[in-house]
Image (cartoon, rainbow, N blue to C red):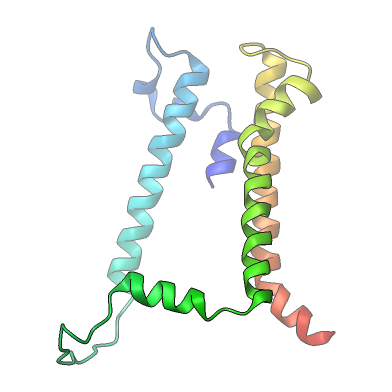
Amino acid sequence: LGYAAGSYKGLHKMFPFTETKACDVFCANLKSCFFFSILLLLFLATVALLYVKDKQVEARALDDATQPSCFFQLFSALKELKRPMWMLMLVTAVNWVGWFPYFLFDTDWMGREVYGGQVGEDAYANGVRVGSLGLMVNAVVLGFMSLAVEPLGKMV
């Protein structure tokens, strides 16, 4: 929904107080995306708190002297990992470092290179909106594929 909000050029009209003399339409759309995100987060958190029921767990009496700290448990678990898991963690970390600039500057690239505009021009704004829409489609496909990867793996 965040990527979809970035692809809608009239978002600032939903929050008219965001457009001021110091903040043009592009700035107002960005502020409106933040307000939209805040409202969406509040709505989803409220729904989760109201409708998700937790199972009651009885408290155990633990001796504080024998309870290892969270960091000790984490480092102990990391020490026990085999080499293939370390390689998988390294590849995943490098993959995210490589993808971060793509997601960060994808919309700007669409506005400048694909649509041939400069900041403040209509061509640039159209490219940014199409880039945001593309990121939304990417997020939707990623969501569906993350659910489908296990059944697909079992078929092979």
